[in-house]
Image 1 (cartoon, rainbow, N blue to C red):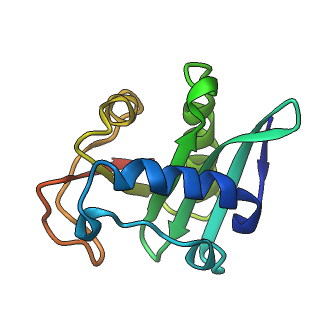
Image 2: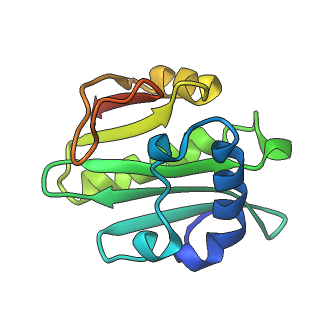
Length: 145
C-alpha cells in the first residue's frame, strides 16, 4: 500500500539509505537531503507499506517547471516487488496534477539497479540541473511526463 507520509516518518529509512550511499561515494558527491529539507512545503513524500511497516520511500521537490525525484529507497528484502516503480508512478502523477510536465533526478554511478529502472520508466541522461555541478560520480536524468 502506498500513502503520503511526513518526512519524519521516514527517518529510519533515510538513515539506512544515507549509510548505504556513504559507503560508495565521497561526501562532496552525496546530495543527501535531510528530514528538515524533505519537510519543506515544496516536497511531497510517499511511503510504501507491507503489513503496516514502512519498507520504501520516495519524494519529489517541486520547482516552477520540474520536479526533482529524491530519496527513492526500498529495503533490500522487499525489492523486486515493483514498489519503487509504484512510488515513481504515484509521484509522477502528483507532478502532473500540479501541472508540472518534467521530472528530473540525480543518482550515483554505482546505483546500477536504480539507473536500469529509471531507463525502463523513460528517463534519459540530461545535463546537471538546479544547483548541481558536473560530477564523475553522478548521473543526471530527466523525463517528460
